[in-house]
Length: 286
Image 1 (cartoon, helix red, strand yellow):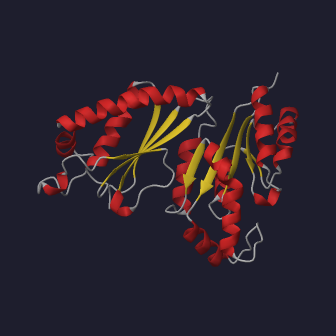
Image 2: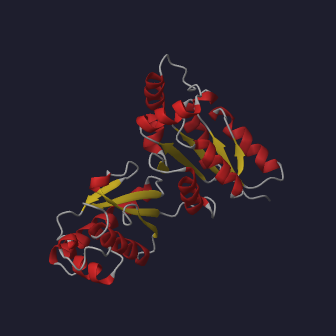
Image 3: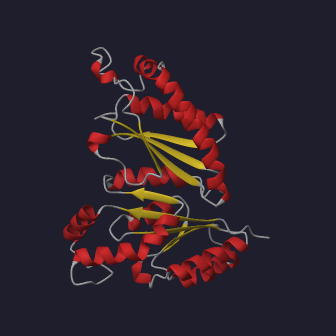
């Protein structure tokens, strides 16, 4: 008996990188179907059961396919009832970046409104509920094509996991802007700042002297204890409602010292709890 396929629905704002994501997933061994009407998801999965093609499917859905959240939800629920592993990847970017990309490529927007701004507004309204329910959200505003490829390869190289909880922890600097694709945002600027210590300033939170400076502090110890308690409460409840991916942003002023040290410590704790964790540092080299 053939195994049920794993289905990854790829959607999001037009111009946010769906085409790039589809190419990367195809390179990773997914059978990719582009511009698919949601009502046809079940037919594609049934065909994949009958045909000798890869078991992992990436179905790219956008406004061109006559998008209907009702149809998509119904098809996803039907697949889950039949034991098919599913997930939704939503690609996003801020409006200024989307407008810039459309102006550079000179392509019409699929929503077809009189202005590009009106088209973006209409598409955001159409996809708002789906974005809220997505398993994975990648904001590509600050990512080039190569960085987006690396991100997708990191998240999906091994195929869609059988719904274990995965946590992404990202450090950043508030002066460079807060990340847009974060479920939980933590501000650690209340901790003593190594930047004001001359010997620590050129180092980062990866370096032992900075790490010791940040972690060897009563407020840090209390904060981490409360954070661990909160995550111990939240993660099982996220799991219980079918959420399998949580992104946590840890921010300090510049994103080089406190946030890096705290993010690394949080990643170590998550791994010790048997939770798959990825730690990234957006601004540590700035």
